[in-house]
Length: 311
Image (cartoon, rainbow, N blue to C red; front, side):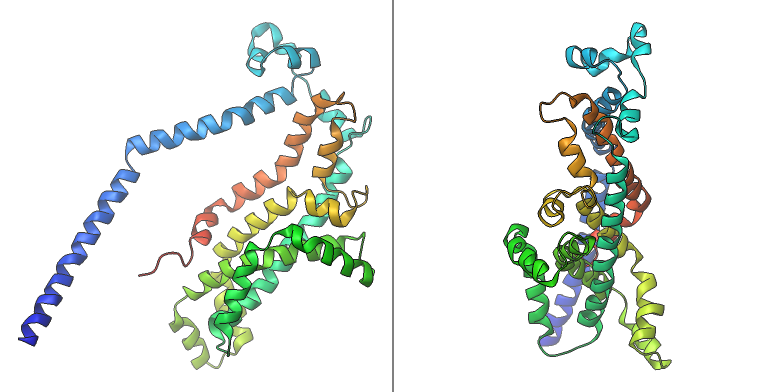
């Protein structure tokens, strides 16, 4: 009797597997239907309209027309002469008080180390949690994951106090270390989840061949981590590049340390008389983040969803 029950259960399991496969196939067909594609394209176009309007406005030379007519009015045949690069020249050349070139360089210098440092540290920590068993690893991992819910504002005053004591205030080191600390919990979580999905047979085969942890990390694990590294790199790059709070709190908004976002916040002038330059300045600041996202987008979804689905 027990044998018959076991056989029936196995038969039921075999029948349930095709059922799950069919449901997954139907769900995939619904998501890939022409209607779903049309809706996605429509949402994308509606989302892009304001950005396109801002781009058109940045090339309009007459401030009077900008303030009195909509951006779509610029495409009338009688208004083609209104387009010019005057605003971009003013923003980049330093005319007046709106030079963005130096602040653009500050953002690059601030962002690149602030992305590389947490990735390097998180890779080492993720490898330890995934492949080196030690006592209390699960509790420590949960504690690191829980740090993501700690608001940045709570840590600012203690960090700034320590920076002053160590003599690191008013330097790029402060910004690099702060952004690295704030990004480490998410980096360790994402990279650990991706690393756990790597087949254990690869690591065991490397150990049989006599490879140690250093060789396994650089020769086996690291080449497979490119999607996850790119995924977190996009997150961290966009966060640091668009940051204003941390830069103002730790950098002091000095010209030598202020990022491009600080210049944009002051570009309109104290009386708002240079508001027409904001559209051009916004697109100058968007060039690098858009290029980074488009260059790494093929890795984005794969790295972001790593470890979220098992089986």
